[in-house]
Length: 132
Image 1 (cartoon, helix red, strand yellow):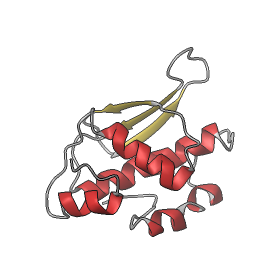
Image 2 (cartoon, rainbow, N blue to C red):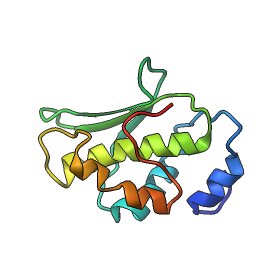
Image 3 (tube, rainbow, N blue to C red):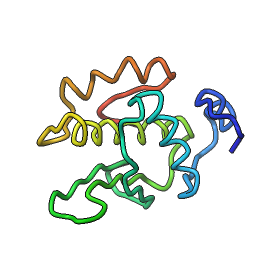
C-alpha cells in the first residue's frame, strides 16, 4: 500500500482491473480515512473481520447484550477491485453510524442512510443498497 493517505491515490494505485483481497492489517488504515472524510472521526473502532460470505459482500452486526465488541463489521475476503472494497466498507460504516451516533433501533437503508450519498460522491465512491 502506498504511503499516501489519499483515497483517490489508493484507488488509482490498485486500479479497476485487479481483484482485491483485503488483509486484516490494511483494513484499519482505510477505515481511518473513511472515518475522517465521511464521518468526521465520530466512529469508534469496531471489530472488523474478513471472511468468505455467501449472498453478501459486507455485514454490520450489533449485540446490545455483549460486554465487549458490541459492534462488528464483517467484509468478504474477495472483491472485484479495491474501489468496490472501499465502497462496501463505507456502506457498513454508514450502518454503524446509524446505530452508534443516530441511535436508530435498526440500521436500515432509509433516508438517513442515503443522506451520505453526496459525501461518498465527493470521494469518487458510490453508496447504494446492492452491489454487483
